[in-house]
Image (tube, rainbow, N blue to C red; front, side, top):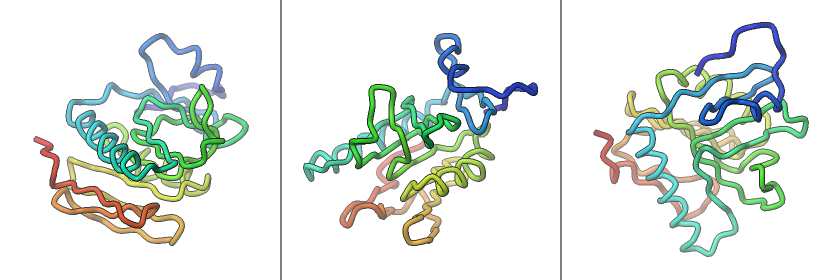
Length: 182
């Protein structure tokens, strides 16, 4: 994920005017081009979307899960446009035909080599300050799942051999040992 070069201050219009198939994220006037995700990345997105979606459906839950590409506008002025790998939104008033207006309750980012600095630093700060309740960074190259529970100001690390409890649900955990990332 590389920032577009130049002194131009990009806006949401620049996101909408990208050529078909080109994806980018917008953070405070900077445009970050997104690389095409690899096979393992997409396998993890599918597994997490399916696992979380089945849990919510089985509980007749009110939350909805959206895999990328799905637009998240973290603030009202549209200066932050992101496409998290997994977004869980429990307040349906935030959902529009364009995406989510405001902070999702739970976000997961699957780390790619080009996205590592963004996921661990810039997005962590933006998600925390925007009001995201929980943020997971899934880093398969490092065999690491880092869970930030912003509501309780807690952070914990897990591996792909662990079952990881979701903080926004009392009785739900993701069994990462159930997916082969080879």
